[in-house]
Length: 291
Image (tube, rainbow, N blue to C red; front, side, top):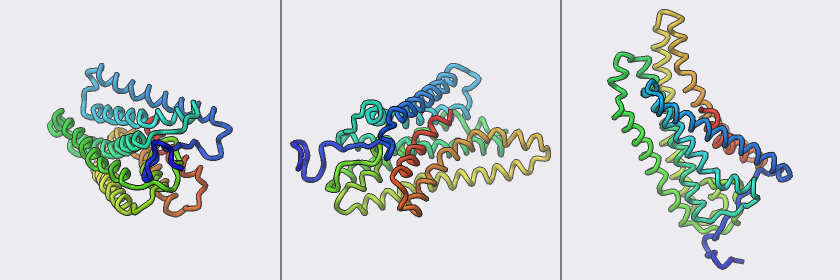
């Protein structure tokens, strides 16, 4: 039966879940999440404070690093309210509209991270392949324009999602499979024709993750070609060493995305805990490792 605030199409609230099969150990899970949040928030705030306070760090590479830290804070704060409510206070309900807002911000910050990693790869490309023009190419105004462009691209492409979800009826229950709201999770409990949502979702993934990853690979192919042309082995290693932290950040971000996609595509019978854990890795590990 519908509650007083429900409609025939949309529930007033949705129910979040923890990690399947680990209900008895929620106290330990809550402790792990609190540690992850603490490391992520403290680490990224420390980076921002260092870059602001140290004049020697007022360089393009560190401006892009600050963008990544700001974005990682956005990812952490987007999931924090419902995750802590679920695991620390055993409060599993979230308002339908609040769920849509959280979904929008989680996906927006995730797509922004891909764009920032692409901008950082361009920074490394210019620094290694055209070092004499590095300061002329990456001026403060251009860095600001790149940051605003990444923000605008993510916001515009994700803005239709809440409205595409809100138009659907929900008659397959109100229980979601995570402790936060994601678009694929909402599609599992939605009724009606979800083809528009799926097609637009695929377009957004290709337009962001797909295009960004191709250009990141292209930039590193050009970087590798430039590095191999350096005669001195010591200089080659020095050039590659400046890219290692960025390569690790790219791997920490894209490997979980690829793993989640492969599991959904080729291991449809995977236990629910596998899907939940991979989504948690995708959202919680990069903000913790990047600092």
